[in-house]
Image (cartoon, rainbow, N blue to C red):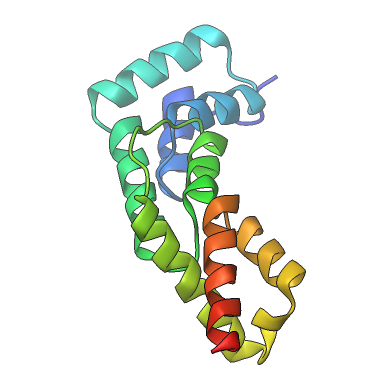
Length: 149
């Protein structure tokens, strides 16, 4: 049962007023609001036609925002895209991800001095940020090598 007198299209425009939505998000939210499958389908088609929905451009934009952020690895970024129903064949390069892991670790150490010394804690931090286990191992091994010299 619909919660308001708005048409599905009006409800969709209202949702888009807050932030860009993927097709999956739009369908889910309209369904939750009580609109029927036909209304939802017509609305989605109209939104694509009027260029209010563009999953490819949205995926590119989200990837770029996280890529510019220095704190996240490729797994985290891809997970954020999947959570919004988006797919993108673009990935961070190994060099780019390794440098981001180094920067994330340096940033954390400015907040918590000596953070790198606790290998398990530092590894957990980087893994939660979406860095691959091989990158985490590489970056933390570099840290140990620096301490030995």
